[in-house]
View 1 (tube, rainbow, N blue to C red):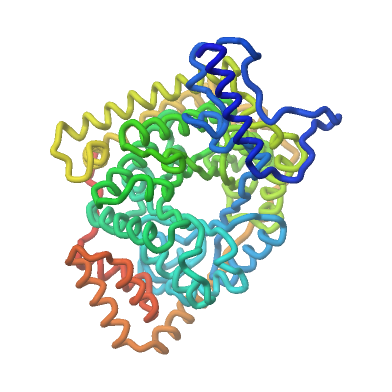
View 2: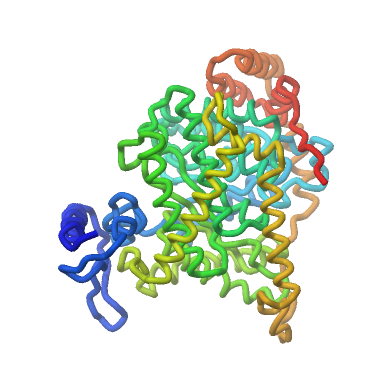
Length: 562
């Protein structure tokens, strides 16, 4: 790019920066030196390839979505929490919000993630252990008791039974008196990554995609600020993928959901802003920064050039980040505070829109109040003390970071081409990327490549080529065992007791009729969300709703592979 084009870009950025709202904050160094909101090539200097770097708030958004960077608005501190019953988790949420958290993120227990009630025989011993137990809209009311759902953004990390859980959230907000059309938050709903990595599915892919399409339509029409899909790379990375694989598989899944929306006749400029992303921030500092920058650039280009998005918001890749759970060690767990801080800083330098920081004890158990506070304070130290919010994309133009960004982008593009090849020439029911993803799931292509990457890394650890402090080097310690949070068996007994009482107090005929009506709608082309909402309002449980759909659609069984 020649000097005149660069100067014109700087002028465009300056005009947008001047017109944008900025925080009332001190944007100087610790020594009092003023710093510019963004830096670029020296004036009157050409910079080959600068169109791939650009300016913050301008296509291809490599340097961020907003001309102000974090001067306009800092990232949302969104701590992921959930354990025991709804009342216990509600207390943790109030602690997080009271300590300065800006949003909530719900962790559900395994029975809920699998669409089963707490009194299901398959739930035995799992209720409340890895998240909060939610059986009905009544539990959702307790979960958010005293928390204004119209005034706080809420993320829910659940995919298989995401749609009925979302309906429970809507009914809880309705019972608070909230205007549902103003709700803001994110539902994960990403079923592709379940087949690829996490394995918390209910049905075959096609019924799941039908529900997701219905949800996209409903939110675009009724709750425009709510993001019905958070396309997740986090679980793909935690399963052992490389950074480039995480990026490519996640964005390919996102392209699949774009194709799903287009196949429903939706306007990409209307529904694409409702797609958000969820990435892992691992411990290789510069690789993660490059990954986040490449993600924005790839998404913007594909949405514009492949899928026809013309609005800026439709081309924006907005993402939440969580520090890498798989990087935490049971050995010398206090070292996890350092790992988490470094990973969080990489996410911030990569321009994350919201962030969860893992607690030091999460490799051993759910976080204690103290470790959860340390995780929260880690973000607040980054936000308030170290000057990282002063300058947009401060590593932009770094020879290393730009080269690494280009390298990861190129690897991702190679993977996209292979996925599309898996889908064949067509015709494609939904779209070519979706066909490739479904074929890759069926053939074990994704899981095979992730397993290979995980094996290569494990070999490097065992040979000592890769180091983990406290595990395969510097293993001596004077630290004592941590006190960890333990979930009492009484939680499960109490949850079952309450569920029994609620079932006995409701009108069974109304519940049965509402669930039957939902199944009847499932047999048509009608949107299922209104009928599912009616079932939830009648206090149908999550297990009852999901079991009715299992009976209608069957249960997905992963093919055996050797």
